[in-house]
Amino acid sequence: MSSLSYSRVQRSFLRYQHVFVFLAPIAFVVGVFFAAPTPAGVGTNYWLEFWWLFPAFLLGATIVNTVGISGSALFVPFLIFLFPLAAAPLEPATIVKVGLISEAFGLSSSSIAFIQYGLVDRRLALSIVGGAVPFVVGGALLSFIVPEPVFHGLLGIALLAASYLLFKADLDHEHESDADADAESDATDAASVEDPDGAAVDGGQPDLPNDADKLGPAGVDTDDEGTVTRVDREGDDYRYTRGGYVRRFVNYSIGGTFQGLAGFGAGELGIISMLGTKVPVRVAIGTNHIVVALTAILASLVHVFGGDLVGGHTLSLASTPWNMVVFTVPATVTGGQIAPYVSSALSTSTIKAFVGGLFAIIAVALFLMAAGVA
Image (tube, rainbow, N blue to C red):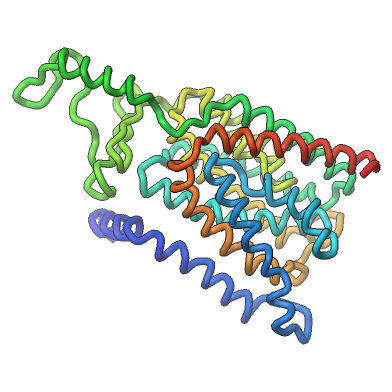
């Protein structure tokens, strides 16, 4: 396929991404209904038993995708504490598996939305995923043999760390204030004089990149010194470098282990590491969606097929609660598409404070469970 044809296909896909995104869970549900290994003699009651998970996971997916963290950070505690109130308690490995499968679809949905807006650094994302792979696989395999009290304790530590990191992080979606933007624009208009060839003779920036195969005035360019200039679909520009690989590797290796073990961790530590290496907030959130989505998909595969690889209990494909995921997957996909609209209507700091506080409360409850008190 020629580069021109590929660009045309990519542009068409992003333009109609809502159609493709919503076809994916429909295909998943149909495939599960007709092909998934289910208990013998199941009927309508089996498939509709957990319909109430749809609104719960829709709300959770919308919240986590708004602030760019792992969906399982809410899904797993929900399945531990609230799910047993309406149904039977689940095994830890089953909880993580349901959370990861749901998260993989939800984050993939929201990732495509961020790609559409030109806020994903794919080179940065792929380098991070490549370094995190062994840690994600190792953490997922550990989940099969870690005792339940230890699992709850580790989950509490991860949530407490996530709460601290969320309160510490500045997740404001705006990369600069309107006043700063206006002042910069006025200064540029007053000081900048371009020559007939379009180059800025005062040392300012030349024309911003605008790729023909992207939607809107979007594009990306990397100069000889490694400075990346990125323009999103709305015309906002961001400048940064891809330096700081070692710092990000350390954070994502720890986060990747928890991602495989408990279903989250890569997103929370990942946001902090990107902001710490001067990646702009919106680019960090968009890129982090890709990283967490890919690691969640990898961890999901290990959880579904990896039970026979370790000396612990076996979690086969047949043991997957398919009557749960047929509702959680469509819910998380929908939440991933709603999140960008919510983030523009609500203060991200408000949502961040709510989620961080909730994490801290859940962490305390998990510590009590690990100690045998609760």
